[in-house]
Image 1 (tube, helix red, strand yellow):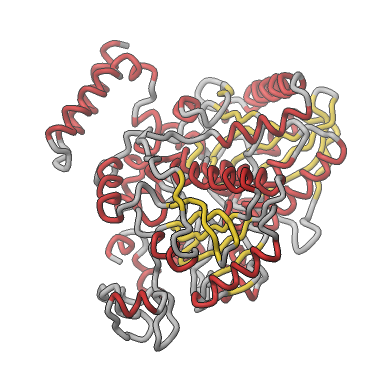
Image 2 (cartoon, helix red, strand yellow):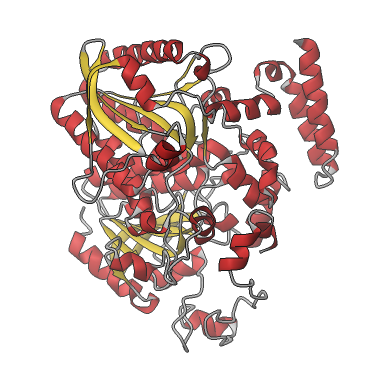
Length: 310
Length: 282
């Protein structure tokens, strides 16, 4: 471990001294900061480990929302349509029994083969998807069903029709709908937590992340294209904005990490589902202890205090 | 643009015109008219020939809207930290320092108490010239404080957005400013105070997907780009030919996403009318 840490530190130091933009004073400050972090570095994922997680989060055999629904919920009934315009297959919503108790569940859904991927639009929802989600949130609220959301999207769909149907407003209102709920809510990032399309259904009392999931403000490719002016620098971009679960936990963005089977969730979907089910049950049980009147205030306060100021 | 050609050459060539040579900021990009600074400021930075709305910096915007001498800035001392020690081609801290020197602002938003036609309100005004108006921890915090300040005073909040979206250099914490500002608006609304959201060019990405879309009233400036995904991203992803008015305020009005498009010379009086209607007493 010590050896590893030294290698990582040296790696970081060599990157630093290679940056001609850094002036002397800044550089020495940075070196000091790195030295202080020697111990912490051991626990922090390296740049390569972060990229491995990006790849695992996008693995084509990774379990998707309905794979978990099938294994965790009894009597699942799926709702369809936003009651206005269309049904969006990139986002599924329904009710079912988790350990004997009815819960509502909303999740992004990707496809396994070309045909289904197209149908599911690669897990990229239109505003219709978020409107369906809001409709199911209302049902949960009306009947006192706890709400679980499973996040797995590269992002909300960037298309002409999506914009014309109000993509930005739908994402904003979906968050607002979650901020209004009085029922307990648990969100878990189970693959890609891509930007606004992800956070639209992740304003929850407890936010969890699977070990190999990523949660980020922009895709590594998008960030690289804008900041490095080269989408090929995606590994550098991912290393810079740190979308892995350990960093999200450290920054106070999520409340817990859900373990996965060795090698990633796709190695054993059954085991991954068992671990996720246990984490959801634990999270709901903890929320049951909080008086309903306090839940919403607590949730808003949690998100209100996010961010780091100088 | 050169950087985009590396991403998808074919699409750039098919759909994007050659980028125009960089014009002087006081030259109208629509009709080519050129103005002196004082002329443009006197005209509220609107082109007298064709009506093009030039960008307005936060402090200038406050001068345009608030009664003279009524503005009292709040939370001016907030500054961004660098929680990820982010650097792309430059360290984030250096970008922040450069932006502060260039704009004289601590971040991309200025908030404070003001009066418009003697009606008290709170203002939250964004400045695109500070790192593209991007929303990071400070902008989110300032907006949340503006909501709380409006609630405490029982007056409406007027927000003027001009932003490319979330600030990538703050990573996931920038994304968290979406739910943060959404929660702040919820609290504001529950206290009975109105949010009047004015969207200037551009209001895209995380801004459109958070507080800017949650106003009781949504107003837009003529020609403002208001889309969740930018035109270049949409063109590259979908390989569709975009409509000429893709994501513009006019298109948003047609599709029912804003209440009105208000030309800048009418903005102050329109806001005053809304403040009278919503009641400055909360």
